[in-house]
Length: 589
Image (cartoon, rainbow, N blue to C red; front, side, top):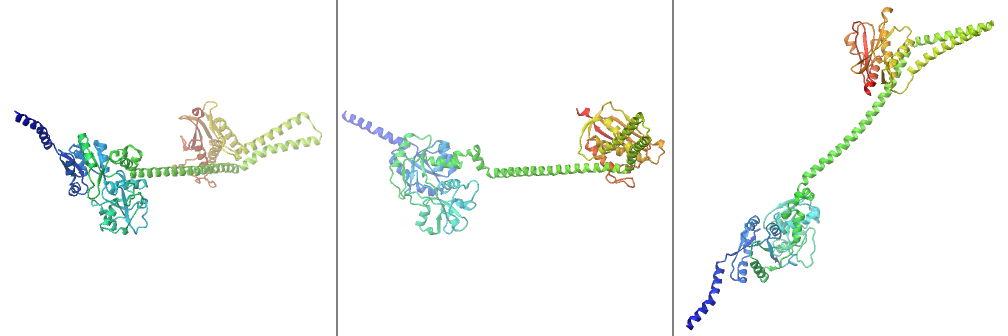
């Protein structure tokens, strides 16, 4: 009985322990993924002791390490195929933002100042390159680096270049990605195939210590001092690699792994684990460079669009600036040519006024004999009356009624002469063009009266006014009279060879298509069609002593009034009909 009781007690003591051992043996191994950036074999060799160290610290759990390239590591995290992840700072920030992994410890190298100041980048060049001292000196130069996703080997330095105004992502320098091992970037500089190299901090010193390069052959571009840090640097220092727990891992297991790592002794290389570092500087790096979780800033912000499409925007800006310059140039040319055109038009108008004035003087010159005769008649009459009065006074034959009648006749003859002079002066006077609204019929009658005064032998002029009474025209009426004088004078001259009873000038006023039309018709000889086509050309004339300017001037005057001067054979023949049209002021209203 006693023996049975003791056996039961032993069974109760042993059974839980054996059950726990069985559960531990049956538990799935803890999977740790490690970023393989140098090759799977070498990465595993760096973490050979880790599974055993963790298993010893956490009884009943087994651990296995899987080296995975960057894309494969991400896919494994996305598929929940890993429990823990050991990766560089840049990939950790990206995986934390995308999949929620949580860091539980941070790698500390022997040279690190702290968990958050552990590594950076160095920009190396040959010591003989005196032209390369600052990061800005590398604009447009060749820069060798390991890979575009290498943290210390590229991204950290790229941020400093960007802050200095050199955007490596946008092509401000020519990047040469040489791959692993990182020392190949230095070899590319030594061979002259690159101007500078980007490597992680302390690699340069390690290679020099191993005799793999001569430190005196190289220099650091834009060095930065970090008190207590034993290596050269061109950038600030950032946290090193973390180990992070996947989002679905057991919290207790995560705590146990964190405590185990923090309690591990330093490795043969001096590496230890420290409490999780603050990776906010890495987040800020990603945000400034618009990478990882901040890639959408490239399309959602002006700075991002400028960064991502700089060449296109630069071309667009150049096109815009070119368009503005072209528009300004065109505007300048238009204004200059407009000014020149206005000046030319003003000169043309002044020349036309002078030409018209000369044409009027020419008409007066051609009829100067007639004008002298017209003035001689009233002057002769005045002289005769004056002599008669003188003789009567000498003989004492003064009759008040006769004296009054004589003086009245002298005054009438004086008015007649003054009227002739006044009409000639008004016609010949040089003045600026002035348009006014006046009855058109009155203008035509004044022209007929003036020509009758200047040409006593003028054929009869028959005026046929078919317009309503008081019809007006907005025009320079003196210029219209000049046109009419030219047309009537030409009509009279074309009929000189005809018997006097067959000479008649017909002037007709009528309306056609809403415009006022004035026609001057003669009974002169038939004119060939080819001659009619040239009548209005300057310097073309059928007269022996003509200049060929009269009709050309008339044509320009009518066109300046918005009308047209034309000629056609008279129907029935013989003779010609010159007619021109003017806008009706009634339509203008």
